[in-house]
Image 1 (cartoon, helix red, strand yellow):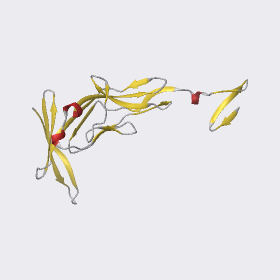
Image 2 (cartoon, rainbow, N blue to C red; image 1 turned 90 degrees about the vertical axis):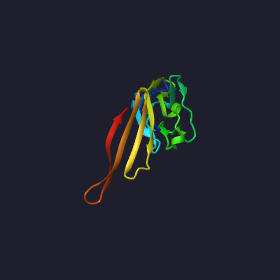
Image 3 (cartoon, one colour; image 1 turned 180 degrees about the vertical axis):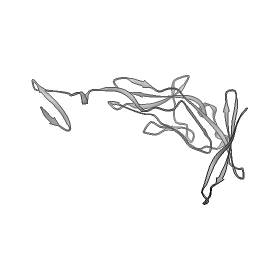
Image 4 (tube, rainbow, N blue to C red; image 1 turned 45 degrees about the vertical axis):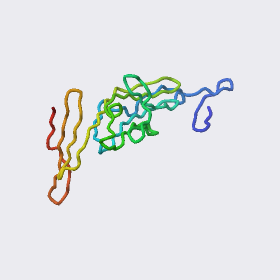
Length: 170
């Protein structure tokens, strides 16, 4: 037996045979994205997707139903090097249905194979932060709209927090 660079092998006829720890492996998810991501234009949303394998897999996002790569849309959508799909804060006028109300899937591939995540439904809503004591968030749906009203709460000792007061479906 010999050890070289942290790899242990067994010599047979002058050829080192790899041990199980160096065999190739198809991709598998370490962190699979959730099935639904809802957010408002006033908050950034991050959708994680991390995979491992040997060799290390490449992670990409596709937009369904066409299965085309979800390319960067400056200021609205991009993918971080760790595979996380990010929707930055945006102005209400920049809300785009093809970006912010869409179906996505994470795909990890290497030379051994590929793995695809569950479908991820992304829904962005609009936030009205001009209210004196709270926020009003609206999330469009296929059959109606959900409106959340949240406001500031002051606890004993002066600690402040936000609390969802009411959620309505139309």
